Amino acid sequence: MIAFALRRLLFGLSLILFATTATFFLVYRDASLVTRNILGEGATQADLDARAAAMGLDRPILVQFLDWLGGAVTGDFGQSYFSTESVASILVSRVPVTLSIVAVGVLVSALVSAVLGILAAVRGGVIDRIVQVLSVIGMALPNFWVALMLVVVFAVTWRLLPATGYVSPAQSVSGWLASITLPVIALAVASIAAATQQVRGAMIDVLDTDYIRTLRASGVRERSILFRHALKNAASPALTVLSLQFIGLFGGAIVIEKVFALPGLGTTAVNATLQGDVPVLLGVVAVTVVIVVAVNLLIDLANGWVNPKVTLR
Image 1 (spheres, rainbow, N blue to C red):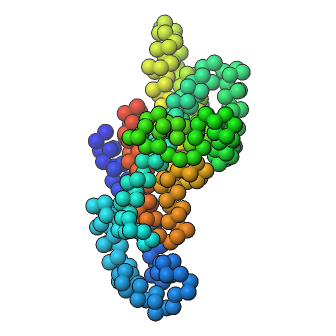
Image 2: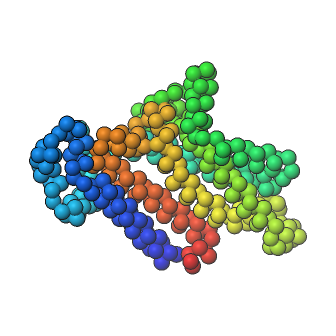
Image 3: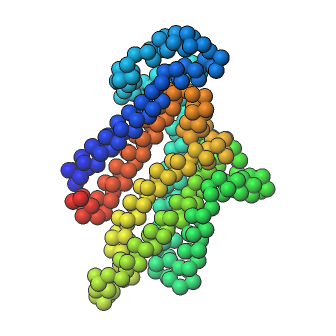
């Protein structure tokens, strides 16, 4: 297990290094593009060269990258080109917003998909068909459309939940829950649909194995068979799908944050891209990759604990 964890950790660190390196070289490949975003289209070449020299962009790009990487390791991602804020302070205020909707979205997806998948596999018949139809519909609906419909129904028509804005849990736990409820639902619908199908299929396969029939013939209670034996063996493929869904939820958060006007990483990344605020964009990429790698490492470890065969790969 330790060797498996070290392999996954090494792979995660390699992925972080690759993603940040590729992003840095792409955005800094031409110093004039960076300085023109700052000075505007009317700037002369002399102005661009002078600004590049002042910012250190005339140095070899490898030297610039090593300087940035050295600072990033210590949490210093530089300063925004368009504000007096450091990139680190911007990220500190934005990360909790995105993590709130993504982490809760993953938790909701895991719980709901487990219940629906087990119910469909065990009951079968009409319930199974209903769950499958709902899963197909859930995967087909765009998350931005789901978000807009939720706003129309729950925020505009019934006025039960806020349509926009974010409340920190430090200010009010109830306000925080209210502010993330609609974004989480909009983000989790497609994830629930995909994970439910995976749980259902895995449970059907496990329940049809010989050792499950042996347990039933031995008089073991059905509830014990279901939750102590079948669910544990079916959890491995479900966890794999969950790790992929986490990455998808992070991507979907960009759209959801825009719909609900949430000041998260997605909104920050879009604004930084439109402005050409390269340090902020690099900071968002680095933090996002670190979070995704960390969560997937935890899911891999959980998968290895549930299914020891995984650690032998």
